[in-house]
Length: 152
Image (tube, rainbow, N blue to C red):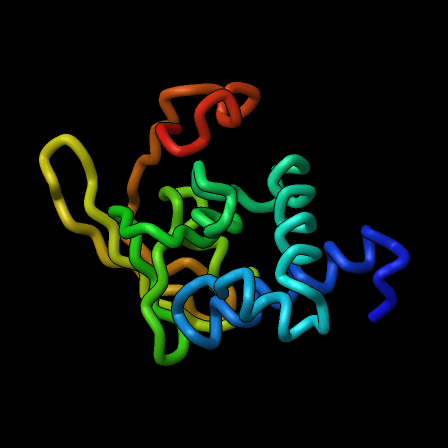
């Protein structure tokens, strides 16, 4: 990969993040991401910073670990998705069906709804969400989500 064009570097790293995460069930470390793309850790970390600034991934406060790569969450949430042999976490109810859509695979989605903690289970088969009727409420309009993405 040419390291001359930061956009090419960023795109390659981002693609590897998604592939690794979906194959391993967790996000890559900066070293794993750098090695896969033939970069130094410092170059990969700089690219992660650019991806974070562009809202394409969300880094932890230390800037050295991936917390989110929409629709995936590195931290446990109330929205688990089984695709293939791995369970992964989605950031929210909106992102949960986005995982099988992104991967173009069947999936099982388990969600715990607040405030009563009620558990819901849905399936996605051949691109169709199979579920009983449900309502999803977003407390904030989309334009405010990045004001505090973790709490949204």
